[in-house]
Image 1: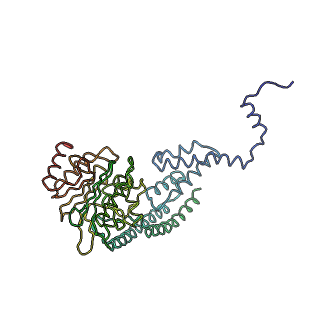
Image 2: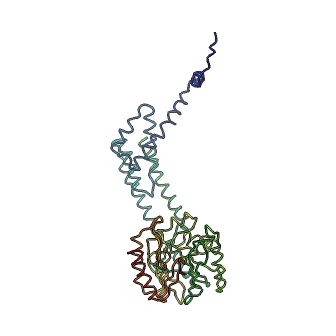
Image 3: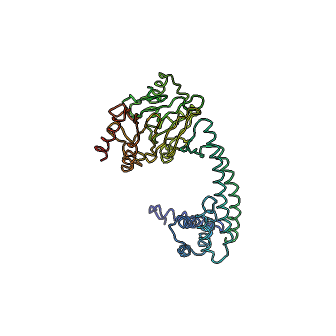
Length: 188
Length: 224
């Protein structure tokens, strides 16, 4: 005899779910990835922002095991690799230290040294160029009869400086990108 | 109103809150002017035409408002700075203020061409106008005042008014800093004290004695 009882929403949902085909291997992987990648990214960001100590990284990542653990770890390492940037040597160093803490004794010192050298060169180059552009802007102001020790042109409003800054940034970004890729290759 | 030499004072006559403006005529190349604190374009409550009024007053003095080439802001509050961006855009003028007040000015949509630091601002070519820019924080973190030693003129923005001082309860305000700024300004040899608002008085105090008495009054009664 047919069951005349009215089904609850949960029962209907369960019946529908049971009738769905099982996930394929690829779908399952994608689902685990979707779920766990953000966790690795979050751990990396918490570490970089100082909310998580280097010595606690291993334990934090060990909370995830199996396939999920691999995904979290990979996302963590990738985020740290991507956080290396020319304009922020301290953060870049911290990112490499975090990678080193996780991958063990692999020798990353050479990359670390290279990153530091590029960041330093970028800073010096930027300061040098800034000073040149600042003097150019001061000269333009002098021609308008505006001068004096109180006057400091705001280069952020100067198109010439913005273009120059973009040029320097992209030159050094491409050098840093090469190191990021090298680092990813060695650690992932 | 011509005050001294090429310096003009434009006292705000309206009912709403808006600032006094001061102008050094023909101080820049091609007879362009330096304007200090243009104020509101339109005042916020009574919708009075702040900039329109300033322009028409300048015209009465035979000055072309289209020739304003540099706008100096004593600080970034909108009752002093709002019209600066419009003047910058329409006249291809430059806007200058202290970097510490840039964030609040930027939030109003303003762009800054020059940061003014403590030091000398030299305008003109042969007969140079030499102005001293003084850091005078307290009412706002990046407040500056402008001293013209040659004519003993001190443009004080909202540091001090006639028997009153600028507010310190707005973001970035600091009563100790204001007190120090007032003390420092009171030590200058001043014949014209040009205030940022006409509060209970037009805001142009003339004569070193009257100016000293005003400083003393404020030090004794407002910020003891």
